[in-house]
Length: 423
Image 1 (tube, rainbow, N blue to C red):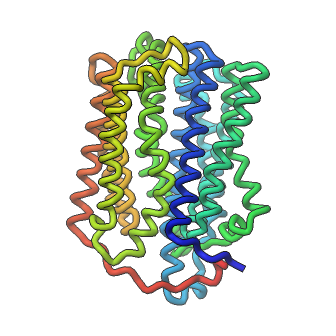
Image 2: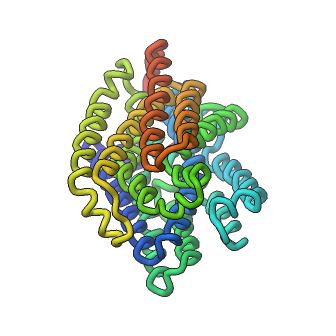
Image 3: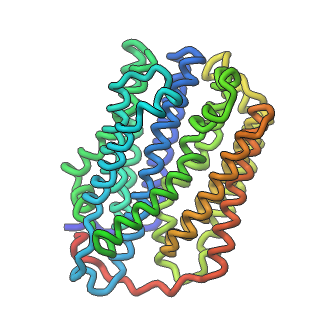
């Protein structure tokens, strides 16, 4: 029997709690690494972390499209008669192809981004890509079915399990390789939900609103956008390593850590609520700007307040990671405010995706990524270049999304009709 959909307050509480747990675990992971490794090794770990999260970020396109496709199917008349694509198998199929590409190409790019990485780590990352495609497919299907307990549980359990394994690795040795292998462990968690959770089993049966080939094409378009997203959101430290002078990067661990820390309070909750925002946009008959008014104002307020707080108390908080991680208050404040620009870009992109406008979604993120990456190659002090990059790129991308959304309003939402196959 399917569980009843939770009320709005319960939904927000479950998703909000999972985002807080994931954010807290992310902070502690960075503390564990900074306390267990030398600054030079930690810079390499942060580059590895950026590569791993960047690859995972590309796969989040599967979740975005799965949420839209499953929710759209549930709102269609006679959906049960449609031979919609099976969401989880398609996610694993695409994830398997991505894992193969990672494994084959690793000898060319891995030594540049993760120096001295053993071959076993290359294979471990490829396997993690395959497993994470299952995690993200199940999460997207659960969001589309509005099974927020399963959706929230997946996010929180993955973060907690990864942290526990990394803590054990740090306790028994704390080597760079040990922490890197341990960071891959969270990708196993979704298998538990797929077998033992009723919500997880329901998500495994979820189907899209179109057939196999159209759904795969849409997933690939969403992943192309997610690749651009990943460069700015999760893979930014790796991009900095490519663009920066090697001597400057060797001293950049405090800056890389500051980038991760200042965006987490805004981006982790927003990414957790992205499925909620998308389903609200699909449901609503109001213009998108009205639906997004409150989230937009919340992001702006959080960015301004957070920037002031980061500038005032951030330098002392950074010392938790050790005396080698001193960062000026102005830089922490600027990075926090830049994270709000990134959050606005995420909201405008979610709007385009909810309207089924994959081309617009891709265009905004590609524009943002091109501008940000281009600025990183401009000569100048690394901290100033990074700040300028994180402000300019998201501002351009959000502008592209905003103009496109306002130029064409979405069609009225169809009447709700529950798909029996989701039960």
